[in-house]
Length: 72
Length: 141
Image (cartoon, each protein chain N blue to C red):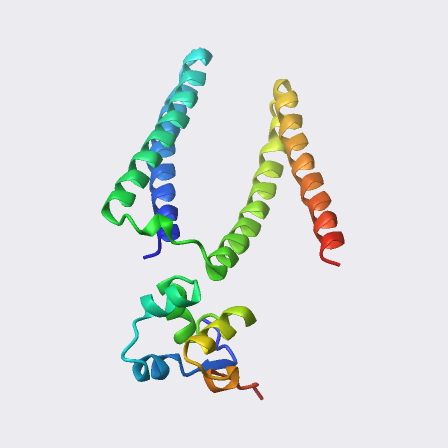
């Protein structure tokens, strides 16, 4: 599995929002629980639209949820 | 496991189950000096029907076990996976058709018509692919 240059704080933000489950976040965003899990673990980079939807759920700006870490 | 993944597993299971049995019958028929071609055609029809019936039955059982799963719409990651796998499968199809076509034309000369049908299917599939590509490119330009 390649290391994607995008990391995120979804796990931490879910915990801050009353231990929101991946299922619940997936329902609010419109993706499956498996996709939330893949994004959270950095195995899948979401589209810009899904990234914005996730940020909206947590009422955070996009850059507070996702970080781009370019390689060397 | 998402519903689409379950569906993929069910299809894989049914394909392997039904067509491995079909392959055993075909290998046996190959060793018979004068096989009954009508029976072989019926066997193919039976295999296709069995595949559809098993697939539908297992999908029905999966839907009964988790009734909400089929109602969840597919998302972008699942679509991307489908697109990637379709692309790979398509290249596999091309390779297999080419592998099958040449022996049919050159080794078993009497089957040249079937060989050309395979080839025609390949050419038609390519025509559809590139025509659709042009339509999509024009629409999204």
